Length: 93
Image (tube, rainbow, N blue to C red; front, side, top):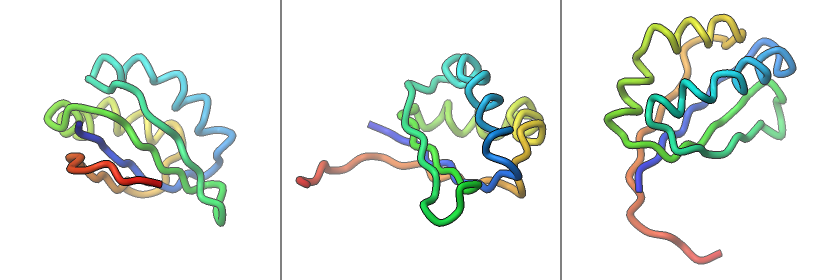
């Protein structure tokens, strides 16, 4: 399986979250199979998302003008960090 981690800071989580939620259909149309949302325990305005996503589709989506505009609208501060990952092994807990 392949995954994408996206990490960024937002100006205000309460403002960012509804905009992020409303954009779910666009992520799905871009190939996302869903994922998980995390927030830093030290900074509530730092968010990390883990998506299951075909890497080529994820790379295309991450470069889209539509995504840049949506992030700006939502108050994302600075460029996000994207990590494109291929799973190689599942580890025991």
